[in-house]
Amino acid sequence: MLDRIDRDILAALQVDGTLSIAALAERVGLSSTPCWKRLKRLEDDGVIERRVALLDRKKVGLPVTVFVSVRTAQHDEKWLSQFVAAVIGLPEVLEFHRMSGEVDYLLKVVATDMDGYDRFYKKLIKAAQLTGVSSAFSMEQIKCTTALPLG
Image (cartoon, rainbow, N blue to C red; front, side, top):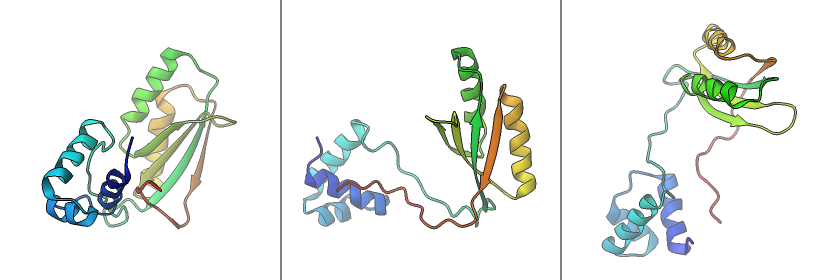
């Protein structure tokens, strides 16, 4: 179970993953050693999966975001293994979800431009037998966060 101090540590790191142990400890009201021990436990327990740098997709040449809905009539393990391996191997895919409802899979994809997305699309449809692929282009990103609401 996470206590208040664990949640405070996690909240602080979600805002700035580069905080030093001393700065993090000060922010959550601990001395450095107990703070480091808690942080180590959170990492060892897998609560903190990894620390990364978040990039501005436009500044690195990937301004187009597309939500791709995939439908299939195939639902056996062999097909799924092939499809999952193919999609995981496509670097344009930021998120890959198996869905309930009318859509079987939802992908969040980034691309350089329409031609870049078309190249991605052609790779996707070669990956596995699909019943339908529908693409919705994001016109404007209104909110984007990686911070989970910890209460």
